[in-house]
Every structure is written in C-alpha cells, then in structure tokens.
Amino acid sequence: MDLQAGYPYSLVKYGLPNDYPKLDRDLRTTVAVIGGGISGALTAHALVQAGIACVVLDARTVGLGSTVASTSLLQYEIDVPLSKLIPQIGRSRAERAYRLCADAIAALAGISKRLPGVPFDRRPSLYLASYQKHLSLIIAEHKARRAMGLDVVLWDADTVKHTIGLDAPGGIYSRTGAQTDAYLLTHGLHRYNIKKGAQVYDRTLVTHIRHHKKGAVLTTATGHTVHTRKIIVATGYESLQYIREKIVDLRSTYAIAGEHGETATPWYENCLIWETKDPYLYLRTTPDKRIVAGGRDEQFYSPARRDKLLKRKTRQLEQDVRRLFPHLPFHAEFSWTGTFGSTQDGLPYIGEYPRMPHTFFALGFGGNGITFSQVAADIVCRLVQGRKHPDAALFSFSRYKG
Ligand SMILES: Cc1cc2nc3c(=O)[nH]c(=O)nc-3n(C[C@H](O)[C@H](O)[C@H](O)COP(=O)(O)OP(=O)(O)OC[C@H]3O[C@@H](n4cnc5c(N)ncnc54)[C@H](O)[C@@H]3O)c2cc1C
Image (tube, rainbow, N blue to C red; front, side):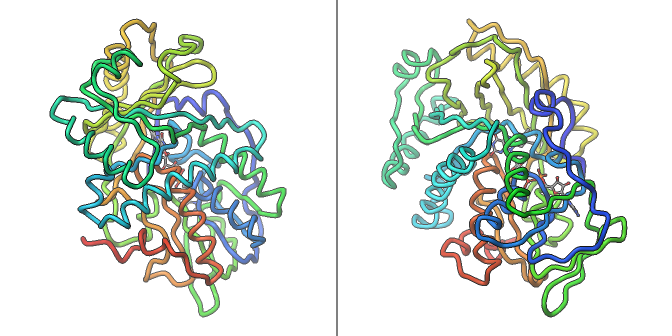
C-alpha cells in the first residue's frame, strides 16, 4: 500500500534517527512482531518489559509507514464522541474505551520519560462546536464525559472568544491531552527495546506465514525464516492483507506545518484544538514554534488521486488556519498526505483473529491511533502469554457486524 506522500514534518526534521539491519539469516524467537511502526514499537516495548524475547520485522525503513505522517496529537477523545458511542455500544463499554485512552496517555508519558530525545508535552485540548447546530452535541458530550469523571469544562461562546480569541458557539476544554512525535517515539522505543534484548530488522518483508501446532514459520522476501511461538501483527492499514472482513473504511487526509519561530504562544496554553464538523480541522504547536494543522479528508483510498490534491489541500488548510487566527503570520512550509481509516464504532481491532492461530493483532486505527496502539500493546502482551485481559472483548474482531 502507498501510505503517505509529500514532506512529512517529522521526516524532514529528524531524518533517519536510527539504522536497523536487514534480516540475513534464519531465526528462532518467542514472539515475532510484524510491523515496526509505532504499534510494533510499543508492542515490542510491552514484551521486553514483560521479559519476553521478540523479533520485530518491517518491510519498509522503520517508521516510514503511517507513523511518519502522524501529527502526533495524543487524545483520549475517540473519533466517535462519547455521547454517541454510549447508545451504539452501551454506557459501560463506551466509558471504558474513553478511560483506556486517557490511561494510555499517562502510560505514554511514563514510557517517554525513559527515552532520551523523545518529546512529550502535556497539553489540554479544546473541542469546538463548528456551528450553532452542533452546540447540543457539545453540551451532551460535556455531560457524558463529566458523568464518567473526566476533567472537562464547558465553555460558552463568550469564554471561547475571551480565552482563545475564536468565534465558536461553545466548546469543551479538557485537561487530559498531550503531544509527542510518533516517528521519534518509535525510534526511541526501538533503541530502548534493542538494549533490552529485542531484535529489529527493517527492509524485511514477510511474504508467507505457515501455522503449525506449536507456532508458526514466517518467510521473508529474501527466503529467510523466523520460527516463532506467537505472532503479533502490527502492520497498520496494511493488516487488511490478512483480514477478509472490511473492518475499516480507508480515506485520505492532509497535514501542514508552518514556518519555525512564527508563533511563541499563539493561543491559550498551546492547547490541542479540534472541532465537531466532519472532516474536522485540528491544530497543535511544535517545540520549534510552528503550527501543525490537519484535516480536509477525502472519503477515498487512491494514492494517485490523493497526491494530486496535495497542493490544493495545502492552500485550503493554510486558509483554515488563517481564518481561525487572522493575527498570526502563518505560512505552510511543509505539507503531506496520508491514508487513514476509521471503523464503525471508532474503536480499533485488537486481539485474536479466528483464521490465524497463535496470532494477535495490535491495530491502532482512527484519529487517535497512537493512544490505541498503546492500549493494543498492553492487551496483546497479556494475551500472548496465554492470560486473559479484561478489556480484550471491547476491541475483539467478533464485534464486526458487516
Ligand atoms: C496525516 C496523518 C495524521 C495523523 N495524526 C495522528 C494524530 O495526531 N494522532 C494519532 O494518534 N494518530 C494520528 N494518525 C494515525 C497514526 O499515524 C496511525 O494510527 C499510526 O501511525 C499507525 O501506526 P502503525 O504502527 O499501526 O502503522 P504503520 O506506521 O503503518 O506501521 C506498520 C508497518 O508494518 C509494516 N508492514 C506491513 N506489512 C508488512 C509485512 N508483510 N512484512 C513486514 N512488515 C510489514 C509496514 O512497512 C509499516 O512500517 C495520523 C495519520 C495520518 C496519516
């Protein structure tokens, strides 16, 4: 699959932080992780912390799948608002999903602390009503989040205007949020995991999996084999190569990064900003004082069509930012596009897939894919040990309705 194009800010800024070898021999391991993006890196981290030997194999140069395209906002807010998720899957499951994402941000803070050079900044988030008619959603959403104990404040139009200078009918200000750089975090994790005994190979495509009674044998494009007891599939949107059901709707999304130094504190607390309309615009700032913005999604997966639109989408996103903050000197310096996907209930698929024995999926789909990747890492690490996880059912493949 063609997952991203253009100049992702993280790649321009950080280049190749780490090199990894190609697999050039046969191996034996306890767990083979297919995919070395943020999901594979977090999963391998959970495994090494649990003392489980693992080998990570990635077809690309590490990080150059969806991960490098990420704008790296860390939110507990799932693409489906809590107030809409409750009638869809029930109150306790919906609240649990939101709680797990909030906990994942705290877990990512703890993990990042041990990784030199990986940025992690706590940031509140502001969820704005795009139109007057969306105010009822904001009010219902605030009520639902408060009811489950999340630290949220309802802002009316005056408070939004007075605090952040924006014209919006209202919004939810939320203390729990953060930002990182998913690409650097991935490399930081691999460096840490390797020190703890994990092996990471990139430019190593797994072309064939043979399952047997006690495990599986993976074969790579160069004919090398990895004998393993268990497999964890962390191949992002390319996991559709293993799954028959259409569990995710693929679309195309766009992002831009402004020039450095343009903004010291451009808006209140440098909070993460997003809004209710679909597709939504979202913004954050970077440590080198840029504004990163994204959105303008298109409902198709076609890399050629997606890339053709990049120039126009860049202009539109630039105008979106300027319209919001007319006083800011904003110029898009880098722009990129990526494939993106959402599920029916906004939740990812994690855990066992019936057609593949000894195999567990760690997929982080949707707008907060990174927090889901952390949730997935925790769950699959437990499952791989033959233990149960109390939250596994929430993300199970069995909930797929077709
Ligand atoms: C423009 C954009 C902005 C985004 N912004 C955010 C955001 O602000 N916050 C957020 O949380 N999420 C965001 N996301 C989503 C987030 O980036 C993804 O959820 C996340 O990067 C997925 O990581 P992954 O490791 O699962 O997949 P990937 O990064 O795609 O990694 C999977 C890896 O598997 C490898 N692979 C596939 N098949 C094989 C095989 N057969 N053999 C070996 N290797 C294989 C691939 O080479 C790839 O490197 C954004 C996405 C895009 C495109």
